[in-house]
Image 1 (cartoon, rainbow, N blue to C red):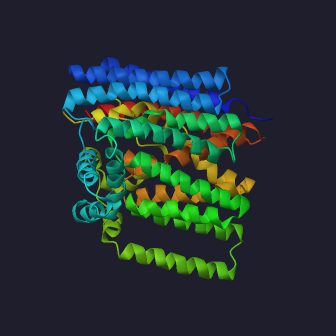
Image 2: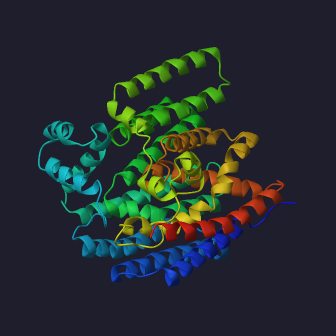
Length: 450
C-alpha cells in the first residue's frame, strides 16, 4: 500500500506548529518595545502569507514555472520593501538591524566602483578583511554601483538574481523530482524568510548560492551528455567560490570527485587521480592561512557556553542544530539584538520538520541508485559535518550553502515514500513525535534567550 499525502501532512503539521508557536509567544512574551511588537507582527504576517501561498499550490492548483517566478519576485519585493523601511527606521541604514559585513561590502564596493578594474583588484587585496573570501562580493557590489551606487538598487539586483536561482533550482530538481515537487521545492526556498533576509541584508550569500547552483547544474549536464565543456564550466564557476568562501570550492571538488569515483566503481587509476587531486586541494588549504583559521576556530557560541553551561554537550547540540536547526528565535528583543534572527524564524520552522526526511535521504539515494544525487548528497553531508565539527551549525549564515540541497534531498525522500510501499509507520510516528518535541523546544529556546 502506497503512502499518500505525506507532503500535505508535512505542510499542515508544520503550519500548526508555526501558528501555535507565534500565538503562544505573542500573548505570553513578557514586555515588548513598540518596534519589537511591530516587527513580531510583520514576521507573523510573512509566515502566514508564506503558508497561504504554499497551501494554494499544494492543495488547490498545480504550479507552473512562470507563476512561481512571478510570485516569488512580487512577494519578495513587497515584503522586502517593508523590512527595508523598518531597518532604516530602526538603524538609519539600509543593511541590517545590527549590521555585520554588509556596510563593509557597501563601502569597499563604492570605493572600487570609482576606480578602474585593475586598481580595484589591487585595492581589494590591500583592504579586504578576509583576503580572497570577500573579494567576490566587493567586486559584485562595485559592478552594480557602476550603474547606480545605492544599496537599494543592490537589493533590487539581488531580487533579479533570485529569479535566476529559483530557475536553476527547478532545473536541477526536475532531474530527480516530478514537475510538481520540483516547483514546490523551488518555491519553498525562494519565498522563504530565510532567503528574503539574505537578499535584502546586503550580504554575499545570494550570489554565492547562485554560483553553487550553477556549478552543480553544469556538472549534472556533464553527467548526462559527457560534454567536456560542461565540466569545465562547472569547475570554472566553482572556482569563483574562492572569492566568497574558500572551503566551499574544496568541498565542491571533493564531492564531484567522489561522485565520479563512485560512478566508475573506483578503479585503481581513479584512486590515484583522486589522491593527487585531494593532495592538491589540501595544499591549497595549507597555503591559505585564513582557511586553516576558519576550520580551527572551534570556539563555542557565547549563548551556548553561557546559557546552557554545557560544554560537554556542545557537539550533541551542534549535531541536532545541523540536522534540524538552527532553532528559530521568534521573539525580537531590543536588548539582545534579536531583530535580525527573528525575521527568518518562520521559515526555519518549516525547514525543521524536513529533518526526518533529510536523515533518510542517503538510504533512499543508495537504494534507488540515484546517481544524479550523489554529488549533491556528498556536498551537503560534507558541509553539514564540517559545520558540526567546528560547532557552527547554530549560525544560519554558515548553513546557507547547503540549505537548498537540504530541501531537494528531503523532497526526494517525501516523493519516494509517497510512491512506494515503504513501511512508513515507524517514520510516521517518529515524525509526529518530533513535531510535539520541537514545538516545546521552540518555546523553551525563545524563553531561554530573553
